[in-house]
Amino acid sequence: MSDTRDIELLIDLMARLPGLGPRSARRAVLHLIKKRGQVLLPLADAMHRVGTSARECLNCGNISTRDICPICDSEKRGNGQICVVEDVADLWAMERSGVFQGRYHVLGGTLSALDAVGPEDLRIPRLIDRIATENVTEVILALGATVDGQTTAHYIADRLPGITVTSLAQGVPVGGELDYLDDGTITAALRARRAL
Amino acid sequence: MIDWRDEGVILSVRPHGESAALTEVFTATHGRHAGLVRGGAGRKLAPVLQPGSQVEVVWKARIEDHLGTYTVEPIRSRGGRVMGDRIALAGLSAVTALLSAALPEREAHGPLYDRTVALLDLLGQGEIWPLAYLRWEVALLAETGFALDLTACAVTGAREGLAYVSPRTGRAVARDAAGEWESRLLPLPPVLRGEGDAGPQEIVAALEVTGYFLRNHLMRTLGETALAPARARLIEVLVRSSG
Image 1 (cartoon, each protein chain N blue to C red):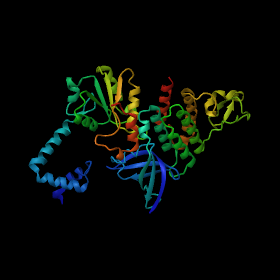
Image 2 (image 1 turned 30 degrees about the vertical axis):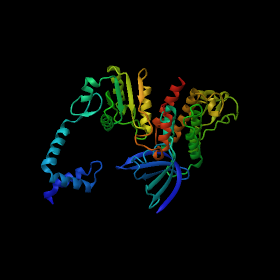
Image 3 (image 1 turned 90 degrees about the horizontal axis):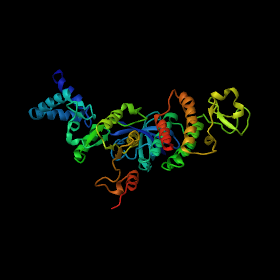
Image 4 (image 1 turned 180 degrees about the horizontal axis):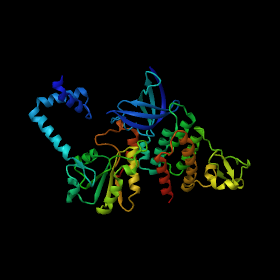
């Protein structure tokens, strides 16, 4: 068994990834070993490089391989808009849409009374600093439609007097049918109705 | 297998593993009771499992002491109504956080449950909600054994001229009877006795008094020294709205 110790370790580590369990990790590792040249070695190389170079952007909290991420570094993105998101995954989702052309600010979570997450645990002071120094004209709060997410949004809005603060609309998703929506979403959608 | 069906209000939800959620519900007849909701972190159930939502739950466990699992059916969602209203949102968070911190587990508090549902149904009605919330805090103190007695002076028995509350007993004290203890007594805002104006400033002053008893009596018996930050946030929002 000692011959397979490294492989067992790899399976054990893979099984800790989201979406994988011991069985699926075993299958993935077997696949990697079979595709050693095409997948395993490039993957190991990429993981090593990211492992040594990935860091949080000092400005916005995005993850990149430099101290200042490409979005903060780009002159084109400095249009005066900052989109505030909870997590890097939300930033990536916004970027996938390709619609937003401003800069971001990653809070690193939301205020939570239950988990004792206060304003000092998030990047709210840094956001206020940025607004003072980056010629910001609008702050877009793209936080989750949850009680914690919206509490955080109101908290931030209260601390940004004299600046335009907007938030994402809430309502019927693209492809959504009313019959399948929860009544909270229908209430939000009806309240945010607009003239056609 | 033990099981029961009840209705309740969601107090808190924590992710558990990849798809389940550890959910705390204030139920009508089983009190504050936790259980695991399988798939609770998924897209289908996440909108239902929001703090303040009213749900019907079926709890199942092999023995009474187990955490058990919940199956959840929505009765009434409140999230959509409160998201855009900062007072309602702060109020909802304060109610759920206080219940979660103050109530013992698995102990029925039927009257307080009914009051809580009535209070949550008033969410978004900015004019009357703060007063309803104040009365709910008074009811929470009474339900947990720390009732305020503001009907008559603890010293003289007088029913007029009540101006203070004893921080030790929670009983009213008349202005004339305060004597040398005046500096140690808490002011008694008239709104706590159902008198006078009930604007945001008066409500905030009354919440200072209920907050004293929640913090120094109720929470202290539970080994806590501070109140939920969500309550402080509600007071901050009420102060902003009055200014």
